[in-house]
Every structure is written in C-alpha cells, then in structure tokens.
Length: 455
Image (tube, rainbow, N blue to C red):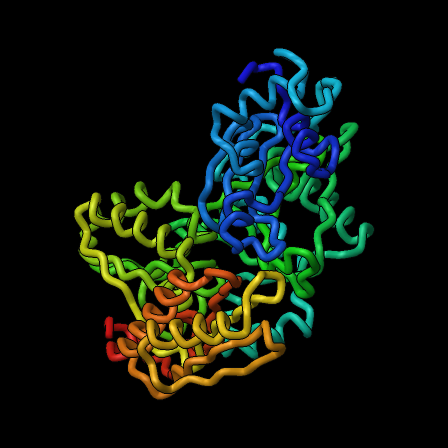
C-alpha cells in the first residue's frame, strides 16, 4: 500500500467512527466479529500513526491492508484494489470517491522513562495515595488480609482534579521525574496526572519487586466493553507516555514457576500457595515471555505450570494462545504442565435460531444432534422462546479431569453445531480462576502440595 495512505482514511472507508487526534484507539476486532466472539467489546488496539495493531483477545495482528481485508471479508489483493479505487488513485471503481484527508494531528509523546525512573516515581506516587474503604472491602472479600493488601501496594486512583494536581506538585518538589512515565503528561510546560475512571491501582512488578507499570481494576465497568482492567497510560495526551504490558512477578523461584493471567490473580494465588508466579497481562500478551523463561532456566528452573482460567477449554482463542505459550516453554527446554481443577459450576450453551430460516423440526433435530455429540446424559434444557434456548451441563461434584473432559466435549459439539443457528458457550463457575480455586479450598499453608499438583 502506498505509504501516504493514513489509517484514518482506512477507517473512514470502512465507516468506523473513531476519536480524532488520538494516537491509540481500541476497536472491535474484525476477526472476532467474523467468528461471533466480539460481543461488542473493543479489544483491537490500533496505533494510528503506525497504521497497525493487535487484538488482545484472539491475537490477530494487522496493518492497514490486513485490517481492511478482514473487515470487508475479502482477500488482501482485493483490499488493495478497493482502497486504490475508493481513494481515486487508480480509476473510479464501484465506490464513491472519498477525498483524501490531511495528515491527522496526533499528540507528541515523551520518550519512555527508564525502568529505574518508573520504579521510583510509581512507588512515590503510591505512597501519596490511600485505599478507600469500599475498594479495600472488595479486596478483603477476595480473602486477602491486611498484610497482603499492604504488600501488594493497592491504592485508589484519585478522582478530584485538585487532588491530582497536588500529587503532581508533591512529586516534582521531591525531585521525582514524571516525563515519560505512563499516567503523567506535560502540556505547555505544566505536568498533569491524567483523569482515569474510579478503580484500584494494581502495581505490575519485575523480578526484583520494582514497579514497572500499573493496571487499573475498574469499580464500575462501562458499556459497550465492560472491561474490568485497564493499563494506566497517558498515550492519548500531549507530552504523555504510552504504557507497555509488562509481566508481573511474585514469590521466590526455585525449580518451578507458575503462570496465570493478571497481577492481582497472581498475588492472591501466591498468598494461598506460596508458589512463585509470573502473570501475563492478557492471554495474548506473550512478547516478553520467552526472555523471562530463559532467565528462569538460567537460575535453575525446570518446570512451568500454566494455571489459566478454566474457561480456556471452551474458548478457542485462549486455546490458541495456550499452544503458543506451551511451545515457548518447550523451546526454552523447560517442562510444561497445566493445572486443571473443578470450577464447581456449569457449562452453558446458548442457541439462537430466531433470525435464521430454521423450521421447528430443524431445531429439534439440531438440538438432538448436539446433545448426542456432547455424549452427556445429565443436562438441562431451558427454552426462552421456540427459537432461543440453553443447555446446561453441571460440573459440581466432578473431579478436575472429569470437568475438563466434559468442557472439551461441549466445546467440540458446539464447534460442529451452528448450521442454521448461532451457538455460544460460556462457563459459569465458582472456581473459574486459580485464585478462586485456592481461596475456595481455604488453605494457606505454603507446604501444601495437594492443591498445587496437576490433577
């Protein structure tokens, strides 16, 4: 594609509305939309200046042509032809000509601050904050105690502009550097702490415990995404800094390392098991994992146990990322293992044939075939309408291996279904995550091995 094409022009061609003058935006992923897994959530992170991005759900990476082609459901060759035609570069084509835009103005960002500067500034920043009673209660409800909350360094993000300005003045007066630290920006020679939704700041720590970045656990996720976690960033502001998705470490590694999703989940799991954890910020964020695994092996590491949420079994996107992670572990010469457990809930398969040309007999036959493919006798069918229904498979009382096997059968049956109706699988589990499981077991003895061995 000619270099003069702008990402803003591609989005305009696709009829996608987006905020102007912003360097990074999030959109619905065209791959997830095509597979019916987007659910209205914007997880494709796009750099407007670079003209490329990645979906942090399915892992789809795309430049301008790939994004256009995936959005239109056409080949890249056809995408190039359409773009040239619609931008009036080669012939009139079959689309209305869209006048080329002037270059969008994006904020000028500060160079990323060094590891040492980020660590010092973030620690001083946290020292100036408090944790509200409501947000502290939410952590206590997850069975963390006062000492663990203090050790984690969790604080509430300041909402009042006057409080944020006071924090900036205090940090500057104490000699801390704010330039290039995500969350801070500098416009017109004046530094600011950017506005962020109400939530809990969760430090992302390196192997030595130094803070490299911050996640935010939102108190009130908003539509259409309903995302619970955001990365603290000021990449949308003049003089700001883009955040990176760092790995989080807790515990002392011996010959075994556990991997899970999210810093808070790792902190809770460590408190209950005593094992060393490495947390990826998302299942698709694996770019720093190979180097971390090599470092672990150099220090005498032998095994890596992956403890992703139990819904990996019914989520094909997560399954793909697990395979990638498994190959990374093998390539490093370490032994990969996977932790599975009983989520104490049910697998729910939702069907929707309302907008399809399917007869009542067709629905009955499809439903019967699905149940037969799943090969499970104990299930419940609930009809919302003659064209919408759910089938629930209980997991409570099953062993971890039995639950894992059941979920796989349900997922495979769902993949084969879908002729004439939409089919969606979800897991409603009490112990979906490793932190839920360990808390539910109610054990905190560091010597306990029963709850930490693969089933």
